[in-house]
Each structure stands twice: as structure tokens, then as C-alpha cells.
Image 1 (cartoon, rainbow, N blue to C red):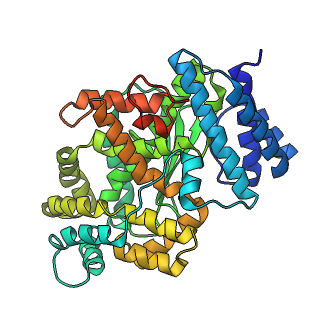
Image 2 (image 1 turned 45 degrees about the vertical axis):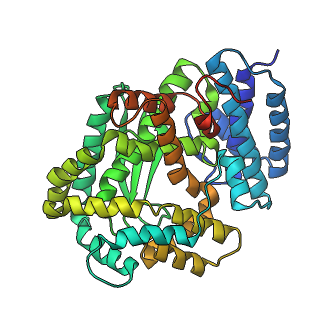
Length: 415
């Protein structure tokens, strides 16, 4: 009888084979080195990889869903991961889906659509708290200009934020003693920060310094890329799924997969789990602002403005949807981001480059966060019950889930 382990081995080899053609496909791998060497040496053509994936998909579909919960989770998640890989390979071969069709098959989720009037209403609320008069994007940029971390202070601020996130996380999550990270500063990237998981409980966290770094991004990136975000997520997967259970499929992380919505959603929601608004304000006002040489008297006002501006995050999804569906040019997308996402021209252009490279991946940040938040709250992890909040959140980090699971009542299993 063919076992799940054998199917998992097939899957890992096919992810690595696809990665030979697609440099972004494999976000992390720490399985047998020989498998990656073999994949690179064979350089199987995309047509062969697509055929093998179709066969694997049929074999997984033929398996009965186990009655044991974790075994059932394992099979359902692997089916979802393979379905996404089939779509990604098809995209590499020239097939195109609409933005929503692509996100549905790759990330098991579709982001809501918002017209410009939705964002106009949010901008009206922001208008009331921004100083000055005139166009809101220009006033927002002028306001934020006073909260840039000087380049020579970036490292000290980031390390303090990471230390705070690690301390808060370790109070609630048992991490291996060997876990560690390396912090690097880079340029020329379409993203602001990235976690490259190396295996053996180690990460390389990179911060892009192409554009000005605002004070709020220090804690955002420290938590998102580090604690309790991507670094912790990958550490717990390696510890509990790869080492303890021997589930080899989790030793590879295909970026364009449902796993990414869970990873990005927990990384974003983890910021508020670790630092609720009052705690965040205290940390930024008392530690990060002084380290950056910024006047802490303005910390509360800055947090208020950023909280309102954050509600505009779905404007980025709309820009990507319009652009990738061919309904807006790159210039149009930049203009939309400037007006409704309050990005300066350089940051908006960088974001469009992100769309070009990562496509519908953008939904994983905001929709992912919203789905994670709704699930955690529904499971009793409300602000009023922080211990329960950490418990439910940690369960999402260390157990297999599909995004569709987050909308299913407890105890129910999707096929």
C-alpha cells in the first residue's frame, strides 16, 4: 500500500523541480540536500513536471480522508499545496487566470472587492486627524516625514524591536534553545523585509533600505519577519511537523501556496498579539522613538494616524487586481496607490514591481490577517483573554491549516 510519506516525497521533489525554472517558487528548503542537487541536475522540463503533478493530484484525491484529525489535516493541506503548485507551473507555461481565479487556486481565498467610494470614506476619517489642509496624500507624506528613522540609527532601532518581540514571544511560546537569526540590510528589492528560513531553527532576516524607514515599520517588521511571525512559524513547523512527526513535505515551503496565506496572516496578526495598542505605544514612545532620535511626545498622535491609514490596506489589492487583469496600466496603478494607499511615487512604483513579480500574493497580507484575526477571536482569543489569544495563535503556527479551514466551525472537516 502506498503511504502518505511516499506521496509527500513525490511532492517535495516536484516542488524542487519547479523551483529550477522559477526562482521565487521555493521560499525555504531544509530537507535532504541530495534531492535538491538531483532536481537541479535533472532540470526536468515544465511539461514533464506538469504531467507528474497531475498524476500526484489524482493519487491524493483517491486517498480516503483519515479519521484521525492530524492525519486528515495532513492530507487536506497537501492536496491544497499540490493544487496551487499545478496552477503556478501552468502560469510559468503561459496560462493566465484572473486575479481572483489565481488567488483562489493558489491561496484558497479570494479578497473582497472595494470600489473607490469605499476608500474615499476612509480618507475622510483620516482627513479629520491630519494637520494642514489640501490633498490628503500630500499631507500624509508631510506628516510622516517627521517620523523617519535616520539611517545611522536603523540598526539600533530594529534590534531593540526584535529583542522586544522575542522577549514577549518567549513569555508565551516555548522555542528551541538553538533558534537564532541573522539581520542584514539590503537594497534593490521589491519588498520592505524578508525572512529566509535556513533550517536548523535559523533565519536570515533582511531589511530593504532603498526607501525611508518610518518608525512604525521597526516593530512591524521585527514582529512580522521575526517574533512571533515568520521566524517563529518556521521554527515551530520544523520542530513539530518535520522533526517530531517526520512529515517531509513541510521541509519545503513553496511560496505560491495556501501555506503563504497562513504564514503572512499570522505574521501580520502576530504584531497585535504580541503588542496590543497600549503596549505598542509604550514600547515605541519609551524605547524606539528615543533610540531613533524622535520626540516621543508625538508617539500617540502618530499611532492614531497610522491606525486609520492602515484601514486603507485593501487599496493595494485593488491596484493589483486592476493592473494584473489588464484594466489599468502600471502608471494607473501607481496613481491609484498614491491616491488611495497613500504611497509616495517611489514606494508606489516599488509596489507595482512587487505585483509584477508576486502577482496575487498581495492578498495574503491583509486578507490573511483578517481571516486569522476572525478565527482567533471566534475561538475565544479576544483582547480580553490574552492567554487564550496566544494559545489559539500558537496552534495556527504549529498545526497544518488551509485558509478555508478558518471559516469552518470547530470540529468540522472539509473534504
